[in-house]
Every structure is written in C-alpha cells, then in structure tokens.
Image (cartoon, rainbow, N blue to C red; front, side):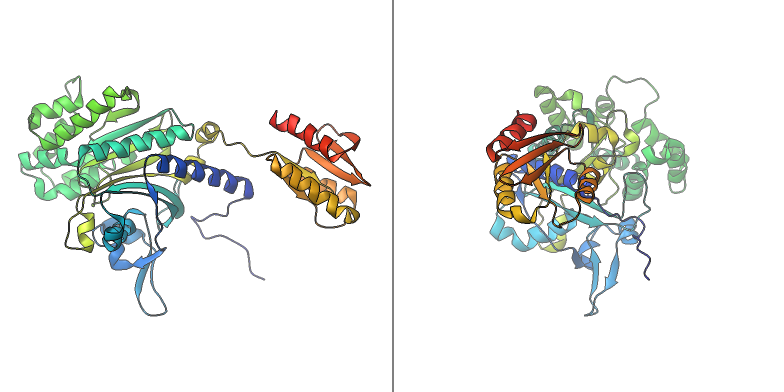
Length: 426
C-alpha cells in the first residue's frame, strides 16, 4: 500500500480554500484588465538557459531542473517575468509595443518552506513593456495600489527605491565593481538585520567603504527626508534621484502619499532589476513579507534578441495573502448561498425544475446522488454545512432549516423559490 503524502513545500487545497483563491484571482484579473493589461500564458517548462539567462546566482540553486525524455536541459519556471521576456521577444511583432500584460499562474522554487513561502505557489504578474518613461513606473505602482484596493486591502505601504541611487553612490566612492554583491546583501537587511549585513559587506569591502555606505543609507544625523539627504550627496542632477522625485511628486498630487514611502533598503535580490524597485507590506504585519513586489528591468529582453526593450512590472503574492488571517478578513469574499435537496427517485423531474429555478436566482443547489436513508443524507448535509434542505413529497416541497430544525411543508415550487430568495438575497 502506498502511503499518501505530499512533497514538502507543496500543498493540497480543500474546496473552500480553492474557491476563495479563485475569487481573488477573478478580482485581480478584473482589476488588471481595467487598467489596460492583457492576459497571456506561457509553458510551465522552459529551456534552462532561457530561465538562467541573467538571473543565475541564488536562482540557479532554487530552480527545479532536469533532463526530459529527449535529453533536453529544461526547468520549471521560477517566476513569470523571465518567461514573459522570452514571450515578448518571440511575439513582439504580433503584439506591438508598448504592451501591457498580466499573467496569473503557478511557479516553482526549491527554496526552504516557511510562513508565507512555499515551493509551489501562484504569482499574479502585471508588466508594461516597451517604455522607459517614469510614467510607466508610476503606472505599475498605481496598478499595484488599485489591485490591492479592489481586494479590500487598504492598510498597506508600498515602499519604493531606485537601484541607480546606490549604483551612483558606489561610483562616487569607488566601489562600483561590487555593485551586484552590495545590492544583494543590502536586500537581506529586513531579514537578518543591519549588523549581520554589515559583517557580510566587510568581507569584501574595507571598513571605510562600509561606514560610508551605511552613513549614506542610514544617516546618524536626523534628516527630514531620506530622499533629500541622498540628493545632497549625489546632487540635483542625479538621474535616479530625479526619477524618484517625479514619481513621488505624482503620488503626492494624487493624494496617495499615505500609501507610498521611499526606502533605500529596498533593492530586490534578482539581478535583472535596473531601476525603480518596490515592495509592499501589510500594516502591522511586516514579518509576513512583501505582498506585492517588482521593478524595472531595462536589459532583460536583450537576452533574447538584438533589440534592447525596456520593461517594468509587479507581482502580487497570492498565496502569501491567503496565509494571512488579517488579509482573509479584509478580502471579504462571500460564498453564494447553497441548498441541499434530498434524493427522491420518483422526483427527478421536480428536482431538476427546482434546481434550475434556484440557480437562476444565484443559489447553488446540490442533490444527493444516491437513494440512501434519510438519516445518512442528513448527516452528509450537516457535514457539508448546508443550512437549508428540501424534501420532494408528491407534487409539493418541504423546506427545512437545518440549523433551527424547523420545517415548512406543502410548498409549491414558486413558494420555495420566493422564500429562499427573500432569506438569502433580500
């Protein structure tokens, strides 16, 4: 006998949870589409060289990689951004640029499972490809904001940075050759703390460089604005600073400053990010991790063709949202009312007439399929959580409240429909 079990980091989903997920996906798809983003899909499997084209590093350790029956080196997609880059390179003539897409699907990463982090999970991606304008970055940030609002999540902060700010500073202090290492290391601060990050940086950089870097990122003197502090160091003509100021001025003019914050610690771990990056945290639950992240990747698409095409995008962590009790309360997903019909061999025609009548007004109906004893059917109905049940008796119906254990007999089809419609739908 085979022991039924699930691989670590993977999960089965019970019907209630899957219904909840499907409703969230439907809401997000509607929100993305309303913002002008078009749906696409890509294969689960890609050639490994496609996925590792530039990310490498930690990604190579995390992907599920194998040789297929044709001895091809393939891997399961670890995100939806890299496959999208390959997709755009192959279809850009059909699509036209700029192109706004969304893609909601599963991805796989062989990383250590922990709260809010699994090896198989959904991503909800939205990208704008073919524009390097700050307006494109703003479009992505506002789409992230509007999508979370659509879900009923209102208490969050979108923390924004520009990787170019740190790159410009490293050029200024003569440490630009360590840019990739420093960006990856700084990205760990919220997880491991400033001291551990400082010690990691000290393995490659001199104490003087590390101290200068920390004074730039975390000034000891009190500053009114970190962005203005960095402007004073890099100058008013810094391209990255100007980019950030355009975005935050727009956010201010839209009266959304409460939802956005500049945070120079946000660098994002993947190397394909080149400019604006962001992460989103629930108010009061930062330990959950970011629920929506992304950024600009100006060079990613050049891996798959001679033309360099700019892109910027974001991704909502659906599974992470659904593991948060706070999010579940905010999502406010309601299930449609459900009614149970007892099996009656002689009443198939009546039963299906009733089923259709109830379905037309938005009530889910389930008729027990087998001619079992009433007690067995009742136990099933209670276990499934039905609050209302219907017996077919001759040409009439009995409506039973399973919670109150009260019945109303000798009802017509119209009377049953009317009562349930009034009770459930008002």
